[in-house]
Every structure is written in structure tokens, then in C-alpha cells.
Image (cartoon, rainbow, N blue to C red; front, side, top):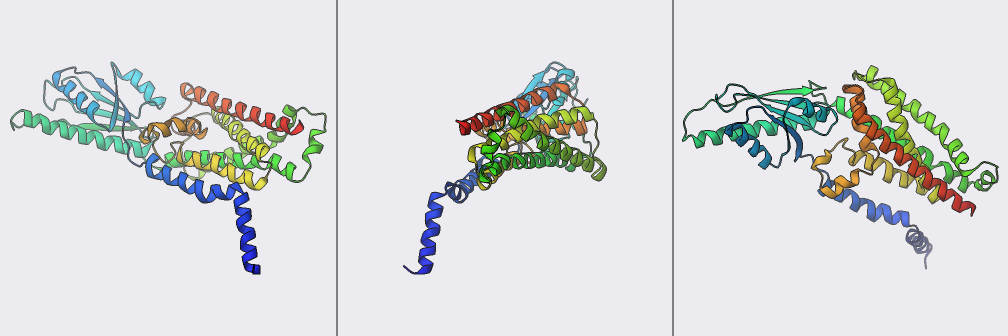
Length: 366
């Protein structure tokens, strides 16, 4: 065998023995193609839309039924605007359609009103466009039903709450902060334990009188404080550099950030303790921290437009709970009915990952 062929044979043998190379060459491309090809879509369908029908006539019911039949809307009817407004604030609705009294009795007496969540500019634009299309279609059908008799078309008044100008940076900058936190947080601790294992210093740490819990706490705390400082820096840049409003409180911001950091730092530590290799830990941290946060958190792509199986998958992505909370802190203020469930879930992720990391370290002792 020639020297060149021997080197190639050695490389092929190393590739065969290293499962991470197989993951990079086969699993990652297939995963990305599946996500971009079938799971992720720029179209919006089944957008959660509240409807308040104040008219309750045959005409208004006909219009509501046309919305329910459309694939663009997932209609939730309410008796009054206030409960629907609370759902819009909590992020469970993307818009509210109000059909005024007189809608059916007097043609053109009152245009319908659409209030959308401007913190999601793309979704708000899509919802506004689809609603105008649905109203035009219904008006044309009504004209046909009257045998071509001229009727006055009913118009639409729209209002984009929280972001009247529909500026995309109002959505992108808080989302970018979440992505930065996810990437930095996971990578920071992904190297912590693996570095100790590779330098053969882990045995010395385990020989100290510290318990496993105390060891993990003292290992993670510096990175937790660094993560909070990085978050504060990003928020200051968003407000003073990019002109974003900051309607919420600093307390709410750092409480949300702390719960998210607990999740991503715990995730990185678990990866580090399980793999015991800095190279492999870095790869796993990017795959499990950065990519899901970018693609499955609702930052770039509307979760409601994804297939049901992928929507369920998004529930295990901590950034899914961070991004709407950050957007609310910036654009809407302190909305604790939205914050508290998200904070609890992110803190739960953190507790689970840290518990699993401690178990992985205890196995090393055994």
C-alpha cells in the first residue's frame, strides 16, 4: 500500500470509528432538509383569530362561517372584546375581528375592525391581507346572491397593537437576544466538565469534600452571572442602539433571563458531563442549543404554520418560552399571566438538566 493510500485508509478508519462525523455528514443535512422542506414555512395558516360578532344576523353569521371554512384562520368566537383582548395580550390570539352592530341590516353601515399583534409584524401583515381577501370574497358572493344587484361593500379597519409601524426590528432584535443567550449559555457550560475530564483534573475535583450539588453550583454560578451581564449588554444595545421601546421592568427582564439561563446552562452542563469531550460537546451544544432556538422557537417561522408533530417538538425548546416574554417586556410591558407560566417552564427545564448532569457526574464517581 502506498503512503497516500495508507493515510486515506487511516482517515477512513477514524471516520468509521467517530460517530460525530457520521452525524455531521448524514444526520445534520437530512435533519435540516426535513426542517426546511416540510416543517418550516413562511406561509401562515390556521392563524389564531378571535371573532366578536356584535351583530348576530344572518349576514354576520355567514361571514363568520366563511372565516371558519378558510384554512388561513383558526376562529375562536367570544361574546365581548375584553376577554379576547386578554388572549391577544397573552399571545394565544394573533388578532381580533370585531363585527359591529348594523353589519347585516345596513349595507356599509359599519366596517369590521381588525386588531392584530404588531409584535409579530409578518403574522400581522399576513392576517390583515388574508382578512381583506376573505371580506372581498364574501362581498362578491353577497353580490352574486342578490343577482348582481349593486350593494355597498363592507370595508375593514385595521389596528396593529404594540407596533403600529410594523417595524420588523421590533420582532427581530428581542429574538436575536434569545438566540445569543441560547448559543452562549449552552456553549459556556458545554466545555466546563469536558475540559476537566480531558485535562485529567476531574478526579481531583471529585476528591474534594464538596458534594456533587455544591460542585455543580460553584461551576455554574460564574457563567450564570456572565450570562446575565451579557443579557443586560444586549438589552442596552437594543434600547439605546436600535431605538426599541422598553415598556416592562428591569426586574421582570432579569427574572425571565435568569430562568432561561438556568435551562441553557443546565443543558450545556449535561452535554459536557455526558460526552466528556470538548469537541463533541461543542457540536452537541450547537445542534441542540443554537439550531432549535433559531428554527423552532417562533423567532423566524410561525409555529402555528408547522405540522402538528413539529409543533409538539417546539414545546421542548426553551427559547419558545423566552421570545414572547422578551417581546412583551420590550413592546407591551409586564404581562405576568404570560411571564409566570413561561418562567416556570424554563426553570423546570433548568432543574431537570442540572439534575441529570449531577447524575452523570455521580456515575463517574461510581
